[in-house]
Length: 136
Image 1: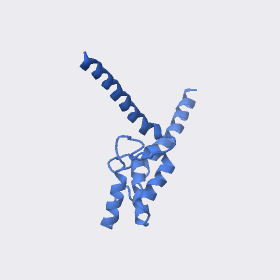
Image 2: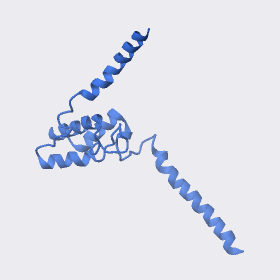
Image 3: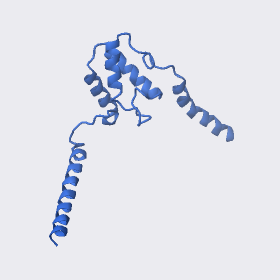
Image 4: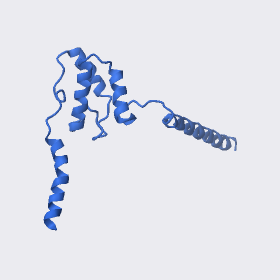
C-alpha cells in the first residue's frame, strides 16, 4: 500500500516538475533586434500583470509564465501587430486582471462610480456637521 502511495505521489508531481524544466520561450529573455520594436514591446510589457507574481509586470517578473507572455508580446510586435491589439488578445485570453489599466465595462462600472458616491456622501455629512458646529 505504501509503495502505491509513493508511486501515485511521483506520478502527480511529474507534470509540475516538467513545466519548470522546459526551456524558456524564444523571446522570454532575448530582446528584439529592432530597437523601435523592442521599445514598443517593453512599453506594453510594463502595463501587463504577471498572473503568477500578481504584484509585478511581466517585464519585471522571472516567473516562467511571464517569460512566455514576454515572448508572445515580442513575437507579435515583430510580426507588426499593434500593441493595443496584443493587449486585447491577452485580456481575452487571461481576463481583465492581466492589465494594469482597467476597462470600463458592465461589470466594472461600480468600481469607478462607488468611490465618487462615497466621496459625495462624506462631503455632505461633513458640511452638515460643520454647519451645526459653526452656527452654535
